[in-house]
Image (cartoon, rainbow, N blue to C red; front, side, top):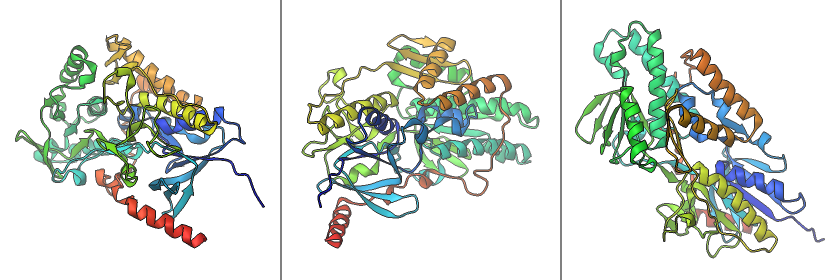
Length: 458
């Protein structure tokens, strides 16, 4: 008996790119045209740019976790797990579920948007000592940890211990690192008023980056403005400097300085998901090489986008330029790739992706911000209004928008209670605990598994 099956569209990853793709597919495809499946370990989309505000307590964790069940139309099947390998020839994706079960998911079209992981280097002690800022759990752990340092410093009678607990080091002068340092410095500045035994002058924040400029994408004027704001607050900024060695109670900088600290936060860039390495396909600086239509050359029905793909940036008109790994590009690529998947499904021509950058926003907490919407340079409250307005409008559900706006208003009026939730009471979660780089299969392992499954079915 012949049964007609619908084409299977598999979307890997529920970041900005994957969620926008699924939303578009659901809107534009009729139920009978295709079966849509999403692979993600979490049933929410994390609004990553607002993580520093979660770490600093301005926003609650739930407010930046947008429910996939609310933002989709319930047609998409969600597999709770992560893709650990893809056989492009056999059109099978190998998935490890959240219960550690390995399943093979066949597809006719696949959209690869697995995102990125924190980029680390071979620095002694780094992954055992540093905190990352890529996940909701990491942001919650960091907040607990920072408040814990204040509590322990307040209780300690040892001046050396007290001083080390009140020094904090953030590595990475990009948006994530700058906003993290700025927001957490405001947290400790406000909290220390509740600790009469602590000398506020002992609290020191260090922001370091190997680059010669802070957030160079902002341009010289706004970059200097951000630098001045942070230094005025007392944050010590060191450029052209990185970490030589990290330990549980001190960090050594590459310029020879040794900083006694119990807090090292690493935000020095991202690298494409290790899933890309399982494909055996061409890459550009670790990101999958794709066409301007976001197709993988020589593989029908395979699309890739977001942080894990080197999508040509046609708007810049430069030969070899690729889109930066930003939420702005990922969201628009998600919508565009969905249209191209539908076009391929219907036998229509695909369109190349072109998007001119709308600008940059950097929220430094309170009334401090710098923004560059459409090339217009803003500082202070106008920049803050643009930054928060942009983030608020990008949230995909009314519930998320309501939560975020309520949190902002409540924090502005009532401040923070500086409560530790107990997340890191037993074991601090370091970089090594969140980057599951050893979970992925090699291309040979993927092939052997798929071929073995095929023989078993036969």
